[in-house]
Structures are given as structure tokens and as C-alpha cells.
Image 1 (cartoon, rainbow, N blue to C red):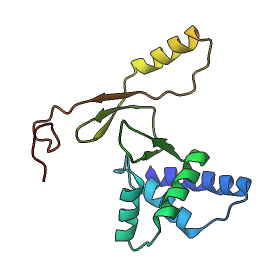
Image 2 (image 1 turned 45 degrees about the vertical axis):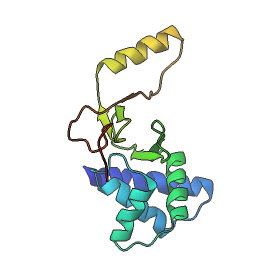
Image 3 (image 1 turned 135 degrees about the horizontal axis):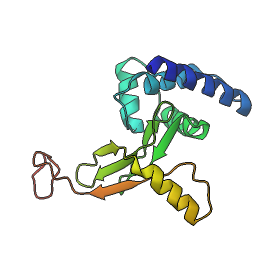
Image 4 (image 1 turned 135 degrees about the vertical axis):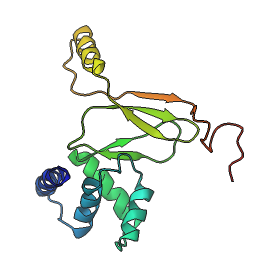
Length: 159
């Protein structure tokens, strides 16, 4: 299943680069493969992605990683999020991903995804109210973690 998403992403990148007149570089395809080959990377930031690539022997500058992520966002291959007051942008792949929403802990910055079928009905209602064809939406709930084991909870001493 993930290889079909990688193939689709590679094809989209090929088309996008050709349309824009950009070069097809090994770095771009290496980053794309990392994003689309590993389903456990739901949300990631540029530093996390670079660390993973460094561990695998790919020595890319942060500028290359950031520029490539911006290019992928423009191509519709990933979605960029800015959650709360976090200085880091978070990313997630778009192909093969269903519509979902987020819950962000303001203490530990953990991002959790959820799907609620009622959101489709809400989209339709909002579209009717404003005479708009809703194509997508973004919903983020912010709160404080209730996990007692969270090391970032208010009042805990974090070393």
C-alpha cells in the first residue's frame, strides 16, 4: 500500500518539477522516499527528518531540507502545519491520507489525529450557509495533557 503512495508521489513530483522547470535532484527524491516509505512519521518537523536522513547516511543541509519541504508543500505532496506557539512547522504527507483533524497538547506538544464522520456533515452545512463548495478544512483543538505520566505537565520538574 505504501509503495503505491510512493509511486503516486514520485509521479506528482516528476510532473511538478517539469512544469516548474526545476531539476530532478537525488536529494529531493531521497527526502520524498523517506516521507512516503515510513508510515510511522505522521507528523514530523524538518529537524526530525534531517536526523533520520543523517542516521541513514544522507548528509543534507538544513537549507536543502527546508527548501525541499516548501517545494513539496507547493506541489501538494505534504501539508504544512503551525500548531499553537510551537516555533517549528510540522508536516505530514497528503497522498493516501484521509481527512482528519488534530488535538495538540500545549504542555508536551504532542499532536494526535482523529477522524469523526460528522465532520462531513458539518462541512456541508457550512458550505450551505456561506454558499461555498468546501474542498477541505482544518480543525485543531488545543488543550493540556491529562496523562499523569507526561513529563511536561505543569508543575513537574523536567531535566
